[in-house]
Image (cartoon, rainbow, N blue to C red):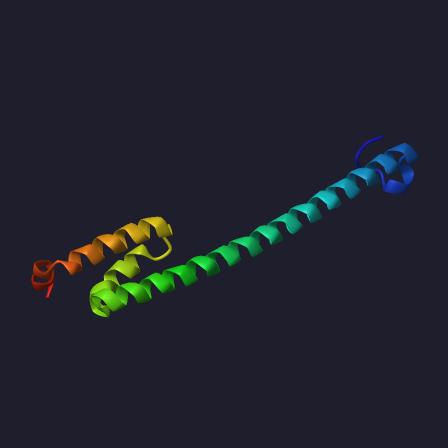
Length: 106
């Protein structure tokens, strides 16, 4: 039988196989969407957590250094990995703790 024949004219065995294939495809599609939904939820939660952590870091640094000097740093490091961000933050903190560094910057 060729592709153009209507479903009712094909034999029963073909029809059964065809329906099974469709069912499988549908199940697979639903499974995929469910999985992606879960992943999306997870990633949202993670970004929330990171944003909170970053805000905390920012507050700490602002207290130490002052707001204006920090602005460029946060713009640049927005959304990067926190460990890297912390390293940079610590470097800058140490810079500002040296009195002559403060004089040079101010």
